[in-house]
Figure 1 (tube, rainbow, N blue to C red):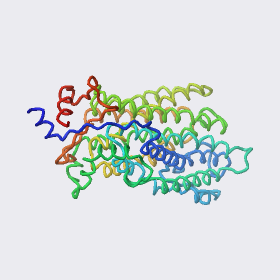
Figure 2: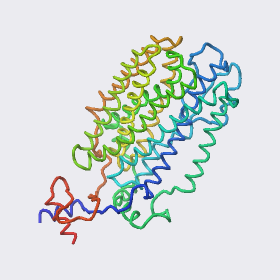
Figure 3: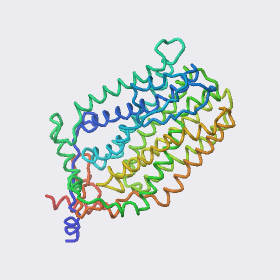
Figure 4: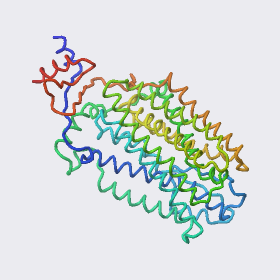
Length: 455
C-alpha cells in the first residue's frame, strides 16, 4: 500500500530509451546544427580581435602598435558593414551588438521541448562547444587573410564570416522546428520517447504569471548570474586579447599568432564537450547530486583558470610553448564553467529558464565591453609587466565566482519555479530484465513494485 501511495503521489513512469544510435536521432542532429550556430557566433564574436592587430600593423588605425583603444567587444558584428566603418585612416573601430544576444536564452527554451532530462547536460555541451570551433577557426583564417603575401586583406575576414552566417541561417530555417511533432522525418520511437519524457514540462509551460519578486529575491539566482558574469569576464579577456598578448609580449608574426591562438580554444571545446557527458554520468549514476555536480564543474571552470593565469603571467619573451600550454589549461578549464552555468538555469528555474537565461546572459555580455576596456587601460605600452597585471586582475575576478557560487549556488528547482503537479519519469537504456531493474530514489525494491503496478 505504501509503495502504491508513493506511486500515485509522484505519478512515476518508466520510459525505455529507443535503441537508436544517438547521431542518427533527430535531437542530436539538431544539437549538431545548433553547435554550428554557436560556431558562427564565435566567428562573428572574435573576428574583430584578429583584425585589430592586422589593422594596427598596417597603420589603418593611428597610434603605436599594441594599443587597444578600440572597443573590441563583439556579441554581434554586422560583418558586412564593418570594413566600411573601419576604412578611414583615423576612424576608431567599433563592433555592434544586437541579434546574437538571443542565442543562449533561446537554447534553454528550445531544448526544453527537445532534450530529455537525463540528456540535457550532454546536449547543451554539444551545442556550446561549437562556439569554440568558431573561435579556433577565425584565428588561422584571419592570419592568412591579414598576411602580407595574401592580397585580400583584413576586410575579407568580415565578408567571409558574414557569408558563413547567412548560410547557417538558411539551414536553420529549412531544418529546425520548435518541437518533435513538427518534424516529418523523425522516427515514431524517438518522438514518443521525447514527448513522454517531457510531458510534465509541456504542462508546466502553460504559465500565466512570472514570479518576478520571488525570482529576484532568490540567492541561487544571484549566485548564478554572478558566476555567469565573472566567468565570461575571464573568457572574453582571454579570447579577445590573446592575439594582442602574443604580439606584444612574444613578438610573434601574425601567421604564427593565429596558430598559437587556435590551440587553447580547441582545448576549451574539448573540455566543454567532455564536461556535459561527465555531469550527466555523475547525476544519472547518483554519484553526486545536481547541486554538487554544478559546483564541481563551476569550481573547475573558475578557480583553476585563475591559477593558470597567475602561472602564465610568469612567461617571458621566447617561452612560446610554456605560454601556449598555460593558455590551453586556462581556456580549457573555462569550458567546464561554461557547461556548469549554462545548464544551471534549467536546474533552478525550470519553466522560467528561458527568461532567467536571457537576463543572466545580458548581464554576462557586459564583460565583452568591460574586459577589453580594462586591458587597454592596463597595457598602454604593451609591456610584459603590464600584461602580468592584466592576468593577476583577471585571475582574481574569475576566482571570485567560486567564492560566491559555492555557498549560495544550488542545483535544485526553486520553490517559486515548482509546478503544482510533477510527473516523475525514470529512464532506462534497454528493456528491463529480472536482474536489471532501474533504481528509483536509491531503492531497487520500489522500482520493482512500481513496474509490477504498471503491469
